[in-house]
Amino acid sequence: MKNQSNAHKKLAGNALSGMVAIVIYMVSRILLTPYILHYLSLTEFGLWSLSFIILSYAGMGGFGVNSTYIRYSARYLADGKQSEISNLLSTGIAYMLSFSLLFCSVLYFLMPFILRQFHIEPSQQELASTIFLGTALVFSLELTLGGLAFIINGMHEFAKEKIISTIAGLFEIVFILLFLALGAGVKGLLYAFALRIVMSTILCWKVARSLLPSLTISWKLVTREHFRHFTGFGGKVQVLGIIGIFLTAMDRMFITAILGLASGGMFELGRKLPSTAGGIANSAFAPFLSTAAHLEGSWAGEMNNTVGDRIKTYLIISIMAILFAIIPVVFLPGFQKYLPISPVFIASAVAMVFFYLFFQLQHEQKKNNFLDNQELKELYLNGIRFTNIISSILFVFLVVMAYPLIDAWVGSKYSEAATIMIFLSAGYAVQQCTGPINMIFRGINKTGKELEYMLVQVLLMLIWIPAATITYSLSGAAAAIALSSITSTLFLFLRSSYIFQVRIWEIIVRSILPSLVSFFPACLIYIITVLFPVTGRIAVIAQILVCGVLYLIMTIALLWGIVLNEDEKKQAIALLPFKKKMDSSQ
Image (cartoon, rainbow, N blue to C red; front, side, top):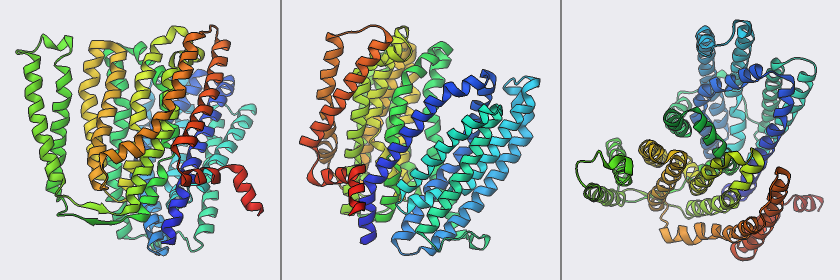
């Protein structure tokens, strides 16, 4: 019980540390880019960027492994089986070392093909090979020994791991400045990257050993049981990660293919700030996995689904998503001429089949097991509540200040990007609350529910994005993405609420309505921008800063006054730096 209490107490601090770390990282990288471009040519900078695109394919190999480290180290800690963590770590290192050796070998033999495919000039090929293979080797080191960081996360010390990554990242910046000043060129970025990974690994090892002095790494500790954890649970998370990468790239693929490169660039401008805001919110999700794994809970109900039952459920959900997607498409002007009969008749028939399958799915769900654990129910509700509050603060501001933000950033001639930003911010704001839900599902080894949600989102986007892009261009594409995100999120609410025995009205009252307080100060700053329009980039930036400060002060005041309960206020005060300093001095 003490371990469970500690896990809960550390959740808020861990989530906050993740957000602070990602903000520091993003700001530092934005400020560093002009300095790098001062020393590197665009070709060299392009080589460096391209190397990480290649590495993203290797990164997919770590999706399931990372979650496996967190889940099972948390479980072993909760069960008092700390010695098993050494087995887990040793097996994970052996598993990822095998993968890394395979990846580097394949990359080495494919290097001539890669150089040809990306049209690397002969004079640049030796440098490109060095950069590609060098970053692959360094990244392989991170993949192989990166389990130390996730072991720390699994022991609910997420804040310590983030401090390490932030310190190592800041030192990397110092190394970059030094190597570039010394004339190392793009290789200087590689050297700094390598030093960051080495420093981070050494610090993680020291912290992990301080938390668990018995922690050891040995090939003798590699076991089949732990290998099955990485291929079983880790394999399922791996599939989810690959689908997630597909989702993030699908919109740009459709837009570029249908509207051309220029429209793709405009869309990228529109999604940049919402994507950054989403990254800040996403950084708070990881602690939910370890906390849920620590709590786990018991199951009650009539039956567990067999593999055949789950496949049948996925098939029904896929058919439902396709049917639901068809209904608005038949009413689009560009598609009605291809219909042999009235779109109203087609939509009505499709809707009847959809609702029949929907009620069948609901009936089957009531036969399934559900969680009999009040702490996990609280974690579920508080996770949605916390995420919605943070997301509303970030995304509502982006919606009301979209046009001034784009004007200040890239100029008024890119105003279409502001429209894209509004749609995407609305969709991302709703979608963010799926983060803690999916992390909790991973923590209790119920990744099938996350797969259901992703299936719905993928199928809706596959149908809606091209249809809306063809009909309404970029604004249609952005609206389709937003609607896909919102619809799939609502579906996840319906499916997950039964698992945690939560009624929809509880989610609305406790976790959704509190996030609406940011709408009041948002309306005020929107009125200010309408009544007092300004021109010129400096004036627009000043207006954004003033409105941003006013918005933040009013939102925090409303949250403190009418939303947060006494326990939440105490937790918020405890997270303040000066409070921690006072406590330590006492």
